[in-house]
Image (cartoon, helix red, strand yellow):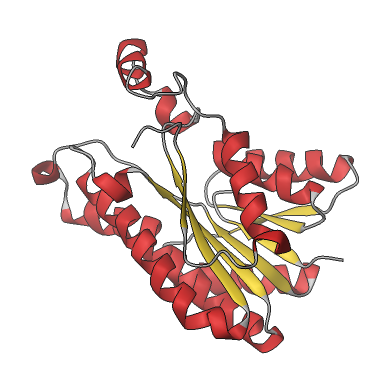
Length: 243
């Protein structure tokens, strides 16, 4: 039997697709949420009703205390942790000069520091067991940058750098670290775009459409599988050839 798979932002569009896909692969899924308790509980119940293992756990990834409490609860409920998917994130479209210092720290804290902190919490167990995987979810904006999303882009670029560096550090311990870089995906975050703005972006994507959360989930599942064991420190782009 596989160990627990922690999915931060597990109740969101990409997160819920990842949770469903990992459950089908036999992972014991920890659906981690911050404010979307009802959605997380419903998702865990849905997965459990299909005879897979899932449970919702509260985790504010901007808080070290909350992270430690969450990881401890997951270990108590499921036992060992074999996979961490750092999917939790926060976006903000604004001029960089208009972002308050508080909001700037929040964007970096959630999108970058939180992923680093929870990774640090699960790594000692993985190192001891000489097995495990960490998959970070980034964005194409972390690769090329986006006007009016400067802090978000910087944080996602940090996730890519974190992935490459950590992969080299823990590879000798049998731990795999990789990253999925998402293009325009059909999630609540992008649903706020006007139809005109959305279409203008889609027109730039060679494949001619917006991506589906399930397509990101397939990339995550592949990187979580032993079949990808020689893939290490890589950025797998899911963007329809946008970049």
